[in-house]
Image (spheres, rainbow, N blue to C red):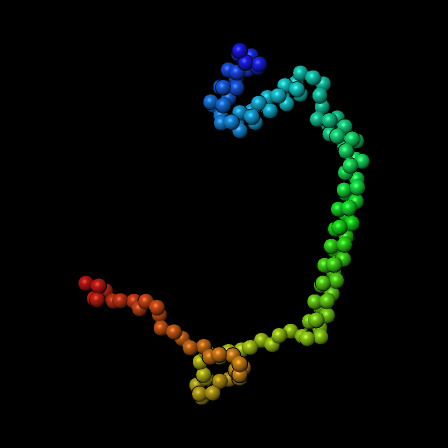
Length: 136
């Protein structure tokens, strides 16, 4: 005979058969917590308050370190933004190169092209379309 008894063994085997191993664990924990809530004077609010009182001496230093880290990070981000704006002010924005695809009717481009920019030449299609006559 198992330590959990025949009824516990049958309940576990039924849960594992109906659900899988993980599902049976979830159902068992849910049933335990709901029975604890219904049978005793257990209150989740008082349990949370109890945990907060006990963990405050552990969590308060962690919260302080977290907020200090957040402040230092915000200061570094502000400094990076300030340096980036300063660089943009000194150097200025990069020029916008305008490219003309086709010459105007007189043969001269209306907008001068940058000397270093390559000309854009249309490419033939990779797979030319075949007419229906060729497919027959």
